[in-house]
Length: 132
Image (tube, rainbow, N blue to C red; front, side):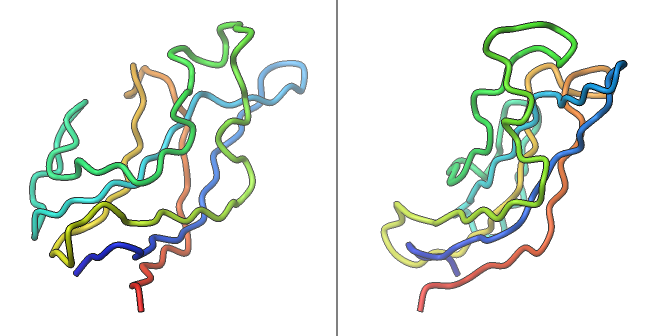
């Protein structure tokens, strides 16, 4: 049962890769926390379609670049996604009342995949904290 004020609390970080000469950088990783108010929420989507999980309650690095770290860009931020374990809190809101649903983590990048952009992210110590 989900209601306004419930929280999803977790820690996350990304992998930093070494590029010749001792420099470190990261691809443009991105993680979303999404909510479905559709009961069992069996439609998990595919590609750009988030399925039942249409309510995005947290977006870590939503402005990631649409290219990889090996492409120079004045706007590229190699540590926009945390490289150290960082605590995040996503708060559920906008509901008309308590509802059956689920939350999901969505690792979402343009041009991702086995030959695409992005390295990896880790998630740890996930807790769902219901409003009292």
